[in-house]
Image (cartoon, rainbow, N blue to C red):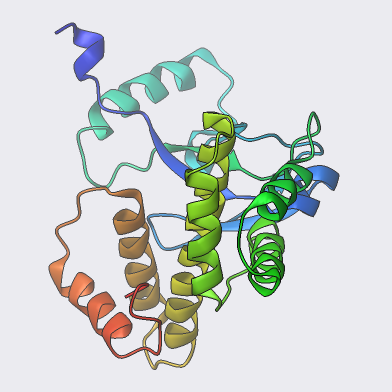
Length: 232
């Protein structure tokens, strides 16, 4: 294994879903960092699936002279070994907007050709509209049916993956809103809420986190919520 293979990752990686209209026309969105704080980001016009945005931490910005650059390199080498080190941020954007093809038309055509009841076709199309716009939904039966239609189709594998990310996001949005609403109604201080939000981001990203007391708080929020069982 070479030295470069064992270097710690120098940035925090995030994935976020961008609604169709925002991806097409540009706009703004907000993500929650692992610190529990929010970051507002500008989405460029004609954003495509897999586009990336990078952000430098404020503490690493505006360093122009040679001494500052040397100090920055030393800080990165030393602090990267510390859990308190705040890395730069990379965000991967996901969306169902594609300026090269009409994904909605492709999927609607697929739904129309599927041997299911007319009512089910209508529900699947309504579900897709919400998925496309990044809106949480309640019709999980129709979502599951649409998932099956897409997964069992002969669509291009990249398009199926693109859809799967959007479908997964719709489920996460329900979970996100549950946690946001619960914390907004709680008596917890801001730093405590940020700790819970940040821990949730670690879990969503599949990153290791040893703050088990906060994880138990998250478990309690979910267990006592009115979320559908499949989301819990």
